[in-house]
Length: 393
Image 1 (cartoon, one colour):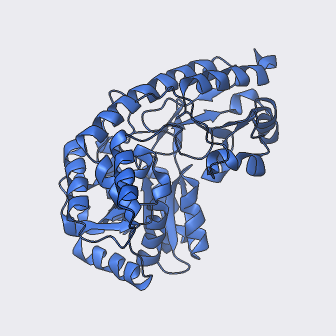
Image 2: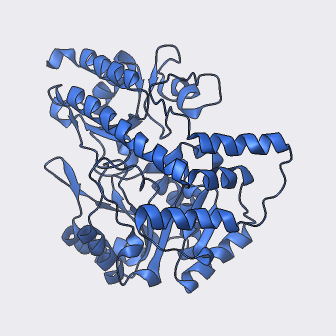
C-alpha cells in the first residue's frame, strides 16, 4: 500500500496520461493529468493476484457459475454498507455508464425527459442525449460553498412542460463533482420527489466506498417506501482503480422493474467480461477492505494539502470533499472569464482538468481536479496553481 510510489503511465494506452495533450493541449512531458477519474495507484495485491492466476492458467474462455462473484458482492454491501442483497437482484453490466444507458433504454422512450440534479457527472447527459431523450436539469443550490437539494424550486420546474415529459431521475450518490455525501433526510427528500412526480429512480453509488474520515454513506435502498421504483448501481471499478475492467452491477429489488431491465440486456446480447468478474470478486474481500481504508486516509491527506493550497489563492474556492477524490474548484471569485482561468490552469500550470460546464447548469465557473495521485504530485499541482495565479496574491 505504497500510495507515494510514482508509477510511469505514459505510453501505456492510459486515457488519463496519453490523451491529455490531444484533448487539452497539456504536453505529455511536464504535464499533470488531473482530469479523468482514475487513480495513479495500483489496486490491492489480491486483485493483481487474481489476474496473475488467470494468466498462469492461460485459458480465457467464457465465465460461468457466478455464485462466488455474487456472494462477494453481497458480503461487501452487507459488511461495508449495511445493505442485504439477494443474488437474483444483481445484473452485471459493462460499467455503470453502460448501466445508466440501459436504464434510459429500459424505462424511457425517445422524447421522454430524464432528470439530473446539476452540476453532475457529465456522462449521464451524454448517454441521455445520444438515446434521443431530453435532459431535465434541476440545479443544486450552492449554499455557503456546499451543494444542497432545492426541492421547492424543482417541484415548480416539474409542473411545466419539461416535468410532464420526465420519466426517470438519475441521482449521483455520493455526488460527483461536488463530493457531497447526502444525508438520510436528503435521500428521503429525493425519494419523495421521485414519488410525487412518478419517476423511476436510478441511484448511481459508484463512489460509495471513497469516503473521507467521519463520513457515512446511506444506500438509497435503505430509504423506506421507494423499492417499487428504485434501481441501484454500484461497482468495484472506481473503488479499486480497475475502471478498464468495465464491470458494474445494476441491482434491482423490484421484480417488475428488474424484468424490464433484463429484457433490454437480453435484446442487446450483453454478457460479462470474465477479467472484470475475477478482479471484482478478489477486491470484495477483507484484504480489499483494508486497502480501501488505507486509501481513504491517504486521499484525505491529499485533500487537505490541495484545499489548503488552493484556498490560499485569492478568488479560488475548493469545495470541501466529503467523498470521492475529485476536487471541485470555483474560480468565480477571480472575476475572470472561463477562457482566462482555464488557460492559466492548462497553459501556465500545465494541468489537465475537467471543464465545469460539461457537468451542466451551475458548473460554468468551476474546474474539476483529480487528486488521486501520489502526494508529491498534489504538492506540485498546488505550487503550479499558486504560480499561475500569482498576480492575485
